[in-house]
Length: 477
Figure 1 (cartoon, rainbow, N blue to C red):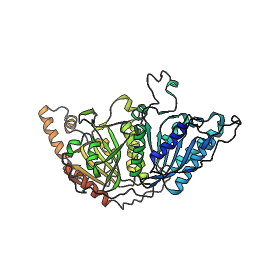
Figure 2: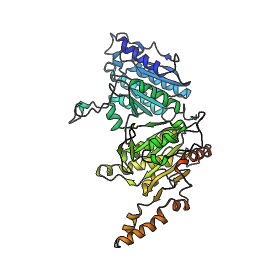
Figure 3: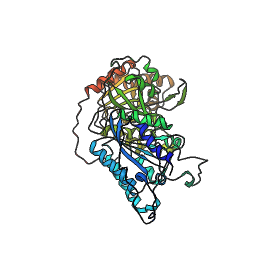
């Protein structure tokens, strides 16, 4: 047994929690005798350290797998300790954080281990929407273990040594790890979209600490802190950040602090958390540009909805609604991604996003910061879908489609001069922000620099929002 590995499991907990706050539960538990391990060796804690502590004074429950004990494999008692931890967290209404470093299911315990793993799945599902669940992958997380982070709300992954997979890269037909390492943090964050945050071990642990301070402890508590930032702060030159809405959200946030989730996945759709007047708000925003740390444009996207972006937004909105976190949307979209691959799944993906927005009963505020065209605009938390307040910047454009394209369709046989004339007429009557406001689709036309104060005011007004809806078990989309 490696003391280094054993100490690593404890060290991760110590680094995660406030100093000297961890209290271990079940430290005397060991593996139970089974058919294939009758001559068992010592198995301290059966390969997982479980207990509770605090992060900035907030109670959390933690389990950390110990790779020095049977490779950190999941056995019957190992899994039962985690399941028991979930029971306690649910009773107390506190988050569960899992630190994974596991060689898989313990073969010697066979169906006993499988059944116990299923008990963890069941507890995770039971806790979903009741308490926040966060997973961090530091070592191997393969096979059935990969379902555990997928069943939680947020997943962190160490960027160099961690492996996350259902089937190993070499087991995939036509692939090997040298071609495409599907178990890497890069693949799981950029392509699979399972991982929210990647980084070094220290960055992962500090990232979890920050996220915990932003989230409510459970679905009955609010995430509200004191705010020292000016509520009426003018955000000069905010319009210049309309392309990269991650920057825009940082500018309007308290202390200009925005925490983006799944930042490497579907970058054309931004999701994340910010504080507004001390209250945690979930943000969903269309993005057409990405700027690097050097201030140079790194990537550019069409102003369209994609299947990946829609699913990313849908899952995020569902989380916010479950935990009573208000939702802010920034809309700048002209349509849907048009290619063969998108056509396979974009209808169902956007339907899922639309359902998430419409089904959410939390306060919802939409700010139209650019173009808002067609049914893509409707799906992006429009007033018709359920936004409680809708603002639009002075230079926003809202309508069925681009005015010139509309004129070409309606006056297909007209000459260029006529089309230009009709396009201008169409734009003034059907596409201007004033026209949308006159029809009640926009509540207030605002200057970009005043976005922060208007959004804060809207959420303050909506703080006691209540809705009566038809009784049902759950939606089916």
